[in-house]
Length: 299
Image 1 (cartoon, rainbow, N blue to C red):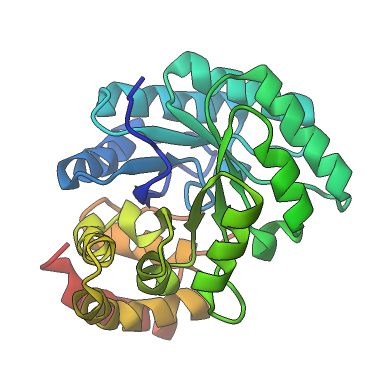
Image 2 (image 1 turned 45 degrees about the vertical axis):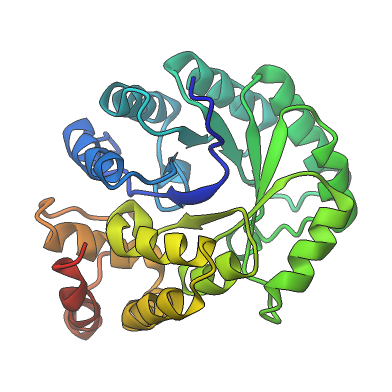
């Protein structure tokens, strides 16, 4: 177990390559993770949304964690997604992650029947009782359709093992005000996701950024985060502007689909997203390639 915090700096979220039957390709996954270790990202977000956690069986998720731990060998903290529809399944996934050697957990409130605030609290409380690993609340309303109230986040922050929250980009773009409000109500490491907001979030004082692009092309993303952490707004915004065409494709086609095109262009083979998600083809694929090509030389 690493002593450095897994919830500060750049947390890089790679795809989890798998075949059409949902079997994880641990060799390709290990090559992706080795690249992140070499770049010296601050943590690896394994089995996040980009890592298709919701599409994988418990057995394949465990294989992915074991392969990741063996590859990384303690060089970078590994944060593992353990979201599941059922509380008992999320508990089992949390225990699996801890037993396999993960450093921390990340959990979104997955649901089919919309959850109440109290149901979400009890879900998280039960998972924290199943594992002693530090846990990050994954606030992802665009996918889960669940919105955490400030009161719920404050209540969850009192649970001993909950140490961080991963927030969506604020609708009004006012990171500084939101961060100040969150810090008044809770003692959690505050991070964001939504890569096109990375520079603004880090310049406003966020503790971490959970990056999709950083999981496959870490170097320019890490350079932007380091510039922002140092208060070098000009450099951070310069890199952000370079990445802007790619951010546009994220918004248009979804970052998951874009990352599969990027992984293929980087020589990882013909990887395809899990069905029913389809790979980009035709003009959309050409648009993504045009946005990616200038970045490959600096990735």
